[in-house]
Length: 483
Image 1 (spheres, rainbow, N blue to C red):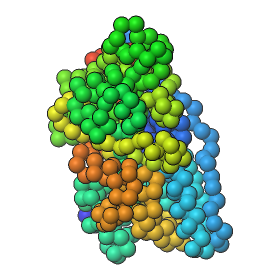
Image 2: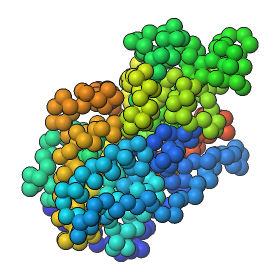
Image 3: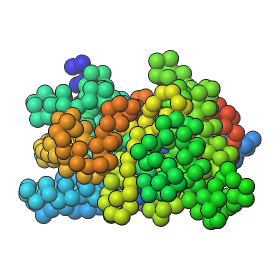
Image 4: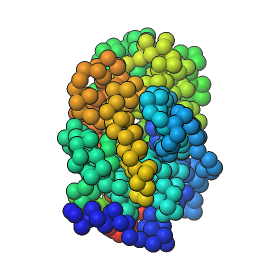
């Protein structure tokens, strides 16, 4: 362990070698977005993934990806008036970003410090952070996702956090979920400090549910229940349902559900059906498995057979629909709490619930984690204030919970504080029981870039489901075979 630790600290690679090992291009990233309402292709208006897939039919009907232009500059906020400055990079620019800004204002008011908070599109963040380390101009601290840690740690881009925080007792490693802590531990060495658990669940409008003759206390438990609810909730402008004669699908007034951001929606569903992207034990792609195909087929049927959900290429944003009482059941992220706080009438009739098992068998819901990290190359004089802020943010998980995210500290989760927050308490229970993270891999961004366009192609009828997943599976397998 010591040798590996020293190797990480020295990061003895040349600029050319590091860039080659990073291997992250603008067209090859599909990044988890947190903090906004996801739209049809998994792109959040406030935090869109870089190269968020715009899928078109290529030669032979194969899905191709046209990356969207990346924003040229981040949103920079100078918080505080202190004589010293911390540069802090992250992608929290949506509903949860407002909570983070409030916390940084509180912290800077207590210290003689200025926090330069730079909010990036997550895709740009994951391109820019490696190049900043290679160019010897890294930020003093950053937030990234747990699934990206193995890739970045393998490239020598992060300072191990055991000596920075855990060995000294500044933060207790045992105060975190051991399974999630393991996700950010590489070769026995933790690479950051868990800040939260966040992920995918369900919000539903109890008023709309009751008016449809359904019981809001008995949400769907399986795929058949889900279809039945969505049929009763979906109406056209004449009040007809999709299973009634005369229903006008071109004039849908209320949608029962929405595929939302395709990555967490389809990953959750695949896991429920027994499928997935790849099996980390056998190192084999699972995308073209019978279970994975059945999971995508289920959502395809919701859109085109049952007509209770819009197509991903419809440009109908789920949060916009939900806010206008045009969507009854919304699969969305834990980061939406501030969205509801800004709409008290909507919040009053909204409840959060665990995702139903659409397979009727396994229960699973996509979850992730934000991680506070210190990039390699931060100078000694900047390291101390960065460590202080990271410790303060970690110690104030209850404040961060106001964003809707579940604090990473188990002591905070069990303190009773989050029980007062309707959505946070629900998500905490879900993550502890059925939450599932993406399998880690040192080339995870390439894997995501392979399967996300296939998800979009399959659900927009650009490519047949089996072909889209088989083609993507071959790309995933080629990454896995490289080791």
